Image (tube, rainbow, N blue to C red):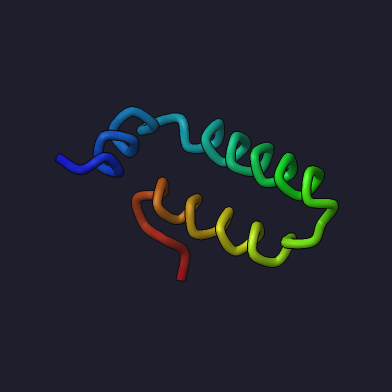
Length: 58
């Protein structure tokens, strides 16, 4: 079982909380870098959120 599979099983039923945590971490990175990498951070946040969802949005 891969690490991502383990994370998915732990987060099952708590997707909203995981999304909030990803947003909060991204906001912290934006604040520390003064928004210099906000585009890359936003893209990474979306990719990570899609990994935690059962079906990525299309």
